[in-house]
Image 1 (cartoon, rainbow, N blue to C red):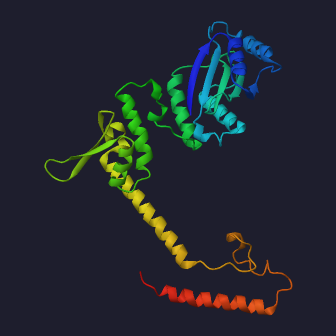
Image 2 (spheres, rainbow, N blue to C red; image 1 turned 90 degrees about the horizontal axis):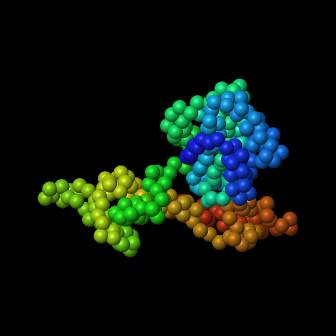
Length: 316
């Protein structure tokens, strides 16, 4: 969540911008305004601003942008609530407010127009507003468990020049590959396919690895320079963790197969039955099922039980 703050003198301009520019713009909050149409909204803002004519820029305009990863969570109600909490923390209260959601970009965002002249005629302070805004955005992002984009993820890659462009490309590739590899050989192989060479730095004349260097497009960068998470020690720790996680997953899978060996489905279970039918023999049996069927079923269960006991004696 990030905020962009702008001040101005033309309420009609900002109201038209907010309500016309965004495709399918949707009003979430309209407080202290006559909301019959754009003209009445602008006139309401202008009337209150005249309570303090000394303020030459009474228009407050804030855009709150959220990461596209949070789109499924950000309902209109949620976005309105977060926007109002942001305004409260910023000290923008007891004044006219218009909050409108736009759908013209891939990431969720709202535009806020507010009157810097409060309902009682005082001027809402803008002291250190950008510093305060950045802090509040981080606090709300943490509070609501929203996506935290790193500084590098906010970079406009198409504007970068070399060697920064290559370094950002390496960052993107490493972010994807390190998280899914279990050892250095696998990582180096996957990187090689994408035009990235890996070289280790050693301590003195020893075999002790001290760092790692990645080369692409003729440019070389140490892992820690690309990002602190890509230093040799941190990548090595991540690869080890990935390997342990995969081993644990396989052990759990093998244990599940050992406890529940595959067996032919019962004649009373529908083909392709899943856990929904587990333990439901009898519930799905026809009313005219005879006693012989019951005997066959329980004999089969007894055989399975004895078979499991034998399997438990197996040592790996």
